[in-house]
Length: 588
Image (tube, rainbow, N blue to C red):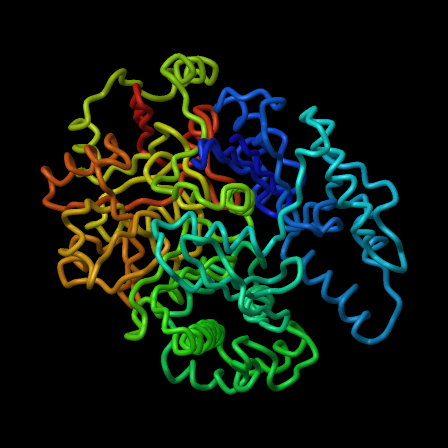
């Protein structure tokens, strides 16, 4: 059975599932080079089909994630193109007036405004109305027709999959768990809710409750904006800032959140009423410090999620949980849930936000079509393109790399390990590209984690990131107990752990400097043998069984996809070198 999954919301992406196994998946942004790209992901679709060697006419199903996609946001590619000022303008020019009872048209303000990019993947004729907003029924027909015409498949093969089901099926079937579990989804907005709870087992998923009143994601989104960062992109920066706050500053801010959400009938719902999630907090935060705001917001998120999860654990007796949806990407909160004594285990897949909808859609359709079978879990996420020696050589020649750098053909792993042991910062573009926003060695920037100065160097001279942001390690599976408190299999950097004293020496540049937590990729040789061998070679030189690993991109750009992207990033940064499968490019 061959299923193509397509999602067009922010982080638009495609996936191909063959006989229950995900063969390929990639986000459109990696090909278009527009971070958080939105719209019909034509390049990602072509990659998936070409990689799998499947003609569209051979497909058994094409599944479109989400019934009601955000047409206005897709039209202007809001999450991809809005500046922080644009987000503030949206609040002041649209929402503030709407809350005041004025008649205001989002269409005239934004989708008709030539200032913004206008998506050309869909025909938007008749979709927008000044009075009523978006005609979702018409937009569904347009999305349906686009897939039908682009792929040349019959109408009976095209199906819409509900947004929430994409998240919950992705969470459960993507995880390496096949026993009874509680599945939670939590996000900003879905088709009919912003959070759900389901019970999953070998037979499938049964939703037991949902609500539209769980506004944790909205609070986090708009407080991110209030703190001067981009919503739907930079929430992780607020999470990274939170541990720097003192208890004194956190306790000054916590009363702002008191009573906003309560657990009622199995859902997080509104308690104390506030008019909105932006202007209210601007007023409430007057005189309070930025770090205290971040710390209190994170504390409140963790507290409310814990209360919600524990309610269902008590009601059902099920102690294994799966978390999916955008809020699952808050790894600090996932650590708090993991550490609850009432919880046996927690499963969080890579990129639990909307970037994974395409895979979730495939899983849901496959399971509903094969009740007696389960799709395969995501045992690894190296699902993108790879490039052979000739393709890399062509890019090196086209960019005249040898005129600016030293190029070593077929470097041995020990040579690269020595460079890293000498505190060279080396990027790696090798093997198949990772699915999602976690670089797991194949599109990564690597460094010696024992040298704390490498954190400053990468942040300032290469990534251009905020100074407070921590990095993460890829560590060898047999060293996990040396570095982590109570480790378990965590291959995708989705859960944080407390660190050991040895970790604070060996991983000084790859743990959080404020609370000493670590968000590791625990690597096994089966998942990535070449990367594993590189870390082992580094261990022989240094005694450190890990490498600092951060995504291979410049700030604000997507992770690199192909050799040309990689060389472009090398040229525009102060990286010391770049490792391909068959070449090592070193700065002269």
